[in-house]
Image (cartoon, rainbow, N blue to C red; front, side, top):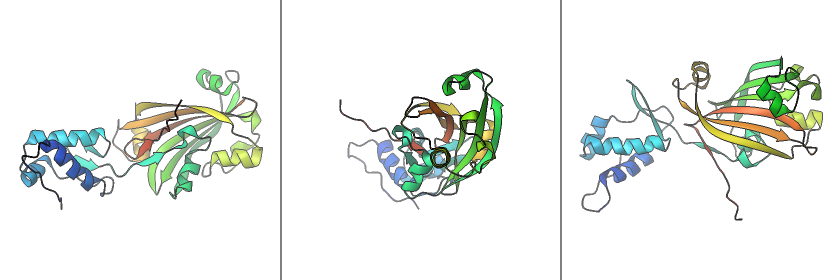
Length: 245
């Protein structure tokens, strides 16, 4: 049931009023729940299809709903905010500290030769042995992102034999290898998922993703690890704290 009334003669555009009514509705819905059709909304609120489409378009831009061609419009679910962009901790630490449940499934763990772009990030020669770890991470039971980490193999001997695929990698590096995270660089850009990523993340093919690339350093300025996170944009937001200069 959709509550709310479009008031006439208030000076507020009809689409604006409808958008706020629908925002309240969809934020209380579970992700993937169907949203009433354009025709139903037109009938319910006695507004034109143009008004409905404008309201829905704004909500799509806000990431609160999404459409699947030929199937309809669906609630995106409440987004989880990640504040780890400006911290040396990872997603596991950030989410668990705020009460969310984080679980992981290992997709790949292997020693491979470093390609040019990865060798540059890890400060090693091209072709040198590195560890590649790929995990599918879940937040409160929902697929949240695919995280790929690269490590210099000889700096962490035997790590490829450890149970790191379902645990916090940063915690393992601290506790087992005595690593001290001092600084890092994180870049964020937009991307879209591949068919394999769509299958793992349980989203439509070509859905938008938040792509985060990070390189972390120790007290000597040496690279600890380089990581690439491909995160569902319908479930996540990034917090960037602004500090007065």
